[in-house]
Length: 287
Length: 241
Image (tube, rainbow over all chains, first blue to last red):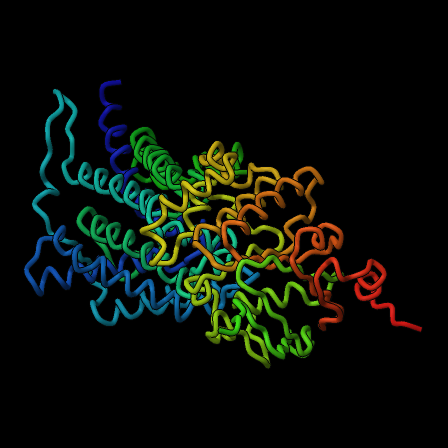
């Protein structure tokens, strides 16, 4: 029992990171019904952007967020405003294809610019732990991931609940004509939403970059994690993101604990299948 | 000084692609008036309101609001000028709370500062909305949603409210209640244009009425000067033999 505590603790902390990875994608799905297949790649783009700012300005990874987040806001705004808005309509397929194309372009552009070498965002937190007892340690970097993840979820929640722009985005997704009649200029409203979603992807990208190594082709791997979190937690639900993230991470880490690291991913997806079987709309999803 | 109308529509045409929905519409609404536009389904009433509010750009003619040309302006330009539309089918935001729906009514920058003041006014007018302010709009009944739609429109402190079929699908007792509030709003100095299929009720409340048929105004006048026979003929398009 004692040796189970460490993977359980790590799973909870990793769950916070998984939640923020899925957050932006889940938000866009909830608002625009857009499945952003490029979400993972855009997140990895943020990791590389952070790398650039760190090298250029000598910042530490956390401070680089102050530069990466606004840049990603603009990137998201432009992608939605100039690409995805044009194909949004009744059908799901055209935006899906545009996002898929964007994903391929991003991966290969990153490959061209940054070479296929493994990178990571250096931080001295990655080796620090805080002992919590004889056999239990709190990995500081994972703990920071978790705290920042929760903070971003809370901030996004407040943004959508309390601000005029956040409410206008929700109102436009509920009834676009109704929103226009309130004096909301709905033409750019989804672009703002994507900009905000990409700011959460920027946080995810920097955290992932500090916690793991990344390559130009790492994006889809995190896209799959985001999908898993969304499906377990419930499409469009922010609380679901955190719960889904923790369940997926626990499944992977406890799975690895019992069956060996080789089966880590498999265990995650088995739990995903079980949730799909028992509650297809996800834990916080509405039927 | 000659009386200047609050709203003046002159020789207005509007199209949906190749289909012409409005033909040479002219009408006026004076300040503080309640004017009814009556017509059967497809007579162009909603198209007319949508053109004034800016959801549809007219293809010919002018719309003036207190002397200022507003034809071709979009809703985010007409709302700050004091025009608001309560749309057909209510169009409240189902997944926003009653309070949030009302707050969206004060979205324009000028109105945000006056949000709480307007909110108090609307809660006074519709106490029911205050009691239900935390509920999601999709949990309200049809009549409550209609009150919410009117309250939400009032949040922009309009001078002119355009109401599109506000009695559609509601029980008579609820309609009566809503019309009572509407008269109250009108007495507070807000000009109202009412679009209805219900001839009797809208003639009862209005100062003046226009009757539309197939995109044209076919009859106008004060309700007392219009005979039932005249109105019916105009409404159904029965031409004198």
